[in-house]
Length: 169
Image (cartoon, rainbow, N blue to C red; front, side, top):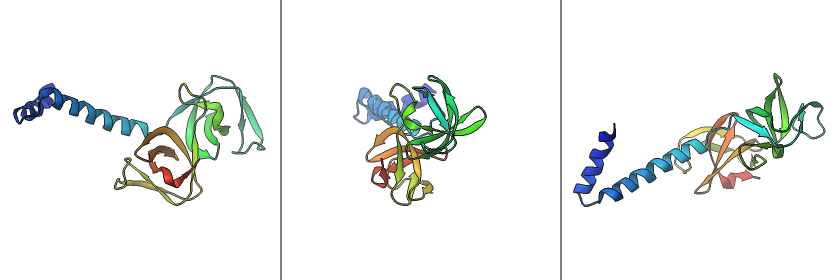
């Protein structure tokens, strides 16, 4: 397998590009592709950063279904509403304020709302393939990456890229 990658590198070196330069280009290309693909995927799990109410609907006035304790790991459904995320808890789908969840070190998970019918793209570029059209006013989960004016996002569990101009945070 390594030989398959070394042969084109030797060929590049033969044509005047030093092996070190060819290797550097290969590493950068592989890293860029990996980072873009991984960052756009919908996050499956989140952790509560404080004790938080599990609500019946994405509204602070909604009925409280339960209290989820700090440090609990919950599975995200992929549904979002402005400032809220739907999670599976105790066999039910409940809503939790996004600020009380974390995907890692930083507390809170960002959400956005589309300001127009917006294509969810498979790559952060204008000519990428459209995975789906997200209707105006729909909430999305922003997964944290931004590349060339495109935000990595999740909608209904599908991960992709949205033009940041089409989002209200």
